[in-house]
Image 1 (cartoon, helix red, strand yellow):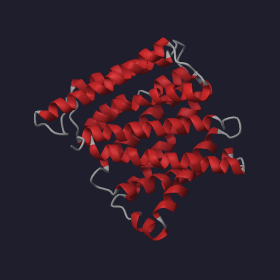
Image 2 (cartoon, rainbow, N blue to C red):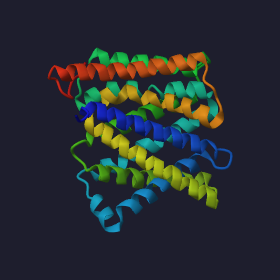
Image 3 (cartoon, rainbow, N blue to C red):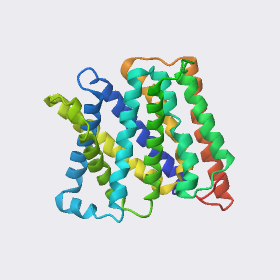
Image 4 (cartoon, rainbow, N blue to C red):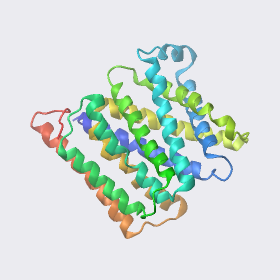
Length: 296
């Protein structure tokens, strides 16, 4: 029996967040060698090389034919701005504060999905997003320091990532998945190339290899994300963005030997519970004939 579209969308988004967490972990090893902007640029260059190699020259040109080319190019600009803003905030803020502010993104996704996508958002989805955010706060434990201007950069990054995912959802049924993926790689490289000259360091051979490796994982992540948002509403998927914290915790233990404390484990359980609650509600409604369009 095939999985319901909503459940399949969740699996795709979980895979996407897992791959992105692996990319972030890999880049962490190179932060002493390359500026953050260089790492962002290399990430998109790697994605472009992988995607272009996979599709081939002739097919690649046909995939560039889009009914919304301007929006396709603007969309990855929001992703580049999101990543860059987060890196700026990390320069001045403790990682806990920056992470907590950055994870307000799902709140913006749910709120903006109403005017931008016309989705109906019931209190069950809002509850799942808020509970998921509470789980994140349990893990990162932000302090009560005085507001710093760089916190606004983390907030800007959260809004930009929300807009990026909303546009991805907007393309569902309107653009080919391959076209959206190709524009993600090319547009991301173009936008990142505008700022990388100010931070340029000639990459070594090993660093170029790293760019290709994280590019391959990034291409896979964005393919999964596009698939997810083509199968389910943005407000439904929003709480599952918090799953990145669980992936990060697992990778932190496997790669760096960071054993999670009790509060971290409780936070992960809260995040998982919020996601499972959404899936349960959607499947419950679907079994009563509401399908994939429920708004509770």
